Length: 192
Image (cartoon, rainbow, N blue to C red):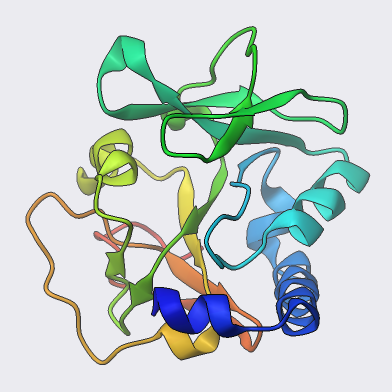
């Protein structure tokens, strides 16, 4: 899948990113979100930057994940604006260089999550380090309703079935250039 992502041309990537942003912007899930976390793409990942731009224009607060050394292998979320200075973290992923304060995952409304592959049940294959699963483990308990986790992918990244592990946190939905697919069985939480 990673090889297929990298084979896409720049115009194909831009067109997919714009189409995905337009599709999500029409949903109540996006309209209701005040605090939205996303990522900056690496290694051919689907690009959330058009969605980030749209969120800024609509007055939403945007955050980027930061590998948080204080809390082990979990993510904190740093405010991200047009003038935020970035630096690569130890994995080469851009993150805010000097975040003033990190927002905890529990205080986000919507999180756009990168992935390598997904299946029709909302299972996600990431890059293998487990940062998102550890950071959002609290969502496996039914009492948590937010944030909503939406995987961002190209439609071709869907696979028939992924083996879910007990620690995996399922996605609420996946957004592709073809639309938003909601997974009603996302841990017993209400649909987005």
